[in-house]
Image (cartoon, rainbow over all chains, first blue to last red; front, side, top):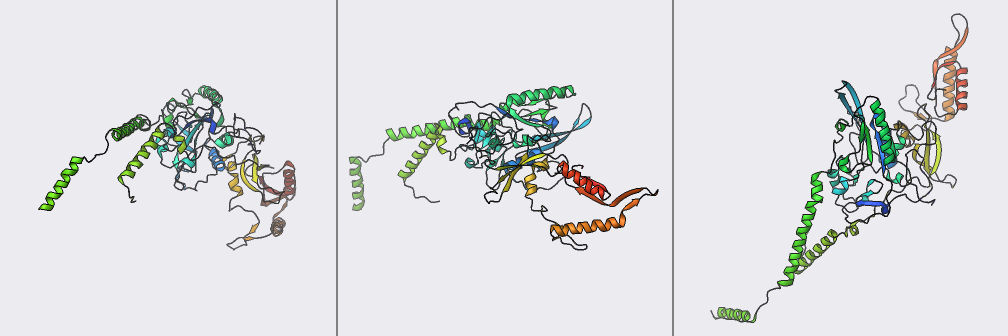
Length: 322
Length: 199
């Protein structure tokens, strides 16, 4: 062991091969699915973020290649149906996907080819984790990474319903849910995600969230100077901000980027079911249990009194006489 | 499922259920978690790093190949991961989609790893040795050059053009190899000469 791994600040570095202690782990958990009263971690890791600058992306899919190679997922070879997306959707074996959309800009009458790298946004307030009924299957670390612990996953699919971005996919082979881990194993040894390292135009960058927001500001200023007046950052408030953020040249219309939600929120059904309904249900169960206990304590079983015995014997005797 | 349940044991079971639910509701849920949360073990730990150049195009990006197995200890080394070299001035660790998928190129079942020959009119390839392959290539080049070398142009000026054979060389070469390739090929008079690395 050569000490504890440092916290990562960039993806442009070569991974270490010497054994070292992970830079974060179980002691940095801030949220665990279906587990209340998690003890607060004794330290706060620097918040991390991956910045995807849509205006610099050339749609080459190096991020997808690097993702597959790093995570040892082997997506099936698909069929070309005349679209650029390959595979056609996120799958349990493809954690990130370039989505292509053609948009006619009404202001300029020009066709714009908008390419967005889709994948887990690592929400500060993760809907998947809230919806998950399996204890310990979805966890959030204090650096912002939301990770799935597959050993604890029961494959119910609630995380898919809970996710405002429609990201998790359930495997048909092992019935467990899969999504981007933000390369938590690389981050644990002080590295950035594989996609951010590979990206040849540096449209994907990785670092602390503060650094990434500052970089986004620089990019937005540059885009504005080039006539993109509505350029902005996509770090949606509805889910408490995200740890994967976009720079969009048309930040006023996220929907044109292959249906990026305008204002993503956790579904009210999930919030209700895991909030008010759960509390009410627990209360009802408590009342029933207390009632049963009181009933058991104060209303004892029926006793046969002496005079009832006499009456019964008399009845039997009367019958025998007939 | 048929369970023989007396009234008494039904009540006992129900009681146990209520107790378990209450414990869960009071926050003893962690006891249920079968596995503690963990991040995947870092897969490159104790692997061997080998620097190389991506074989695809003339950009010649630097790559690092990670392999398992100690050749010095008599084991076979197996490449288990390839990624860009952040210290390389050309690509600073980045790679294109083809370069990023190099491991699958190395391990592809369809990868050509030895010379093969398909005789004229035959439908199948057959394996041949490097000596046989180089002899065949040399023979074909000599025959074609003897037949088609243009030694002088219309005005009688010596040109020594050999336009009926082309030559393609590899990209992952050093400057010295590239210089030698250029000299060897041009000295035969070949005009159609290209290389991924534009030697």
